[in-house]
View 1 (cartoon, rainbow, N blue to C red):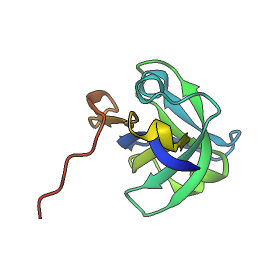
View 2 (tube, helix red, strand yellow; view 1 turned 180 degrees about the vertical axis):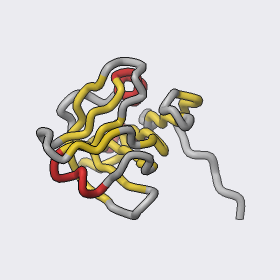
View 3 (cartoon, rainbow, N blue to C red; view 1 turned 135 degrees about the horizontal axis):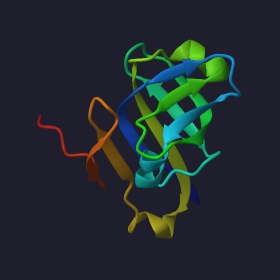
Length: 126
């Protein structure tokens, strides 16, 4: 049996561009892609913290250390510059892989620069 698990996420990245008349995708700073282990053309889910929109697209590479998060094509209707996003990638794992697996979680500042990287989400207090 395979189980779909969160592979990685970019937490609360800020949209820098929204380009309707561009081939559909989400351009992501290459440094962020690498930190999250995401690949160019990989399917990603985007959760817009600012307006509640949720959509699926694919990642493309933006210039390294540029801070660019550009939502393009039809998805540009779902995110505006300044919106906060969670960008997630998932992987299917066999049961025997689950014990050794931990997701890649990347946290950024207001300029989309990495400030923390973790392998788990801290427990919430009751």
